Image 1 (cartoon, rainbow, N blue to C red):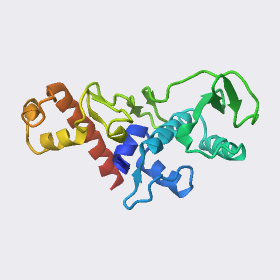
Image 2 (cartoon, rainbow, N blue to C red):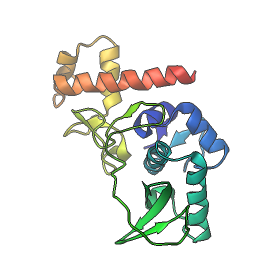
Image 3 (cartoon, helix red, strand yellow):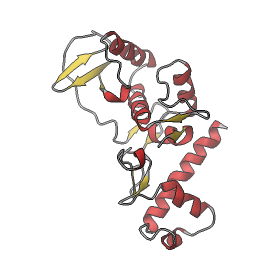
Image 4 (cartoon, helix red, strand yellow):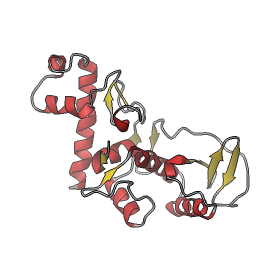
Length: 204
């Protein structure tokens, strides 16, 4: 499953212009070479990490951290690494060790574990929803539909439900089409879809 730019922006917290800039400057190139641009779930996780770090640090330090990973021959996908910020640096967390990637590259030190999947505020002041639960009755699981948001406890994609609602089916009647989807799930699916459309509209 791959993610279009607008949904990637909502789930990662990056703006559409940031995604474009980060592709152009190769901070992160999508795993899939597609036109229009599509991102993998791992791309979304890496982008969300960058957005979290960017809410506290200049972009230059994030780029320096990624350059340091390459100098350390750590060339897997950025989502493979646990990157956190402590003070004014970026730290690579490996098992029980933490390595400074920016201020004193290679030096081990103290760090505080912050879960970038949890809600946070990006540098524009926008609340970035919990990646695992972007709405109370929606959930994201990588092993389910490749991380595509689904109605809680089901394999029903949020956008399939949202399109029904947008087409005039009241949320309370969605269960006629998807018996496992109740009113709360249908309402949340429509709400997430509205945010995706709004961000897509800003990109147009």
